[in-house]
Structures are given as C-alpha cells and as structure tokens.
Length: 55
Image 1: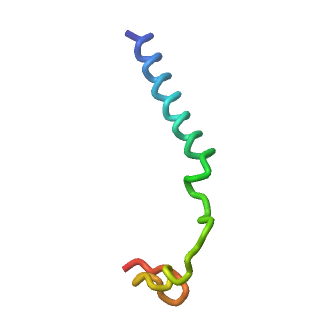
Image 2: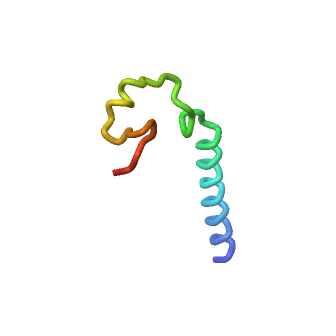
C-alpha cells in the first residue's frame, strides 16, 4: 500500500514536471509576436491611449 502511494506520487510529479518543462522551453508559449499589425490593434475597441484597457 505504501509503495503504491509512493509510485503514484512519483508518476504524478514526473508528469507535472514534464508539462512544466515543455511549456517553459516551447517558444510558442509567452513569446513576443513576430508580426504586429498596428492598424488592427488600433481598431480594437479595447485599445485606448496607446494601450489595451480591460472593459
């Protein structure tokens, strides 16, 4: 029983670490946009005074 619990927790921790490392290393998550269409940004209703405002 105790060994099963230790193995289960180890598997869960390994999976969570793997997901965390994947997100941290993958450039698509949190990367700056490569192309910014300023006209499209300015046309957004939430873009006021040069910044985005939550409504």
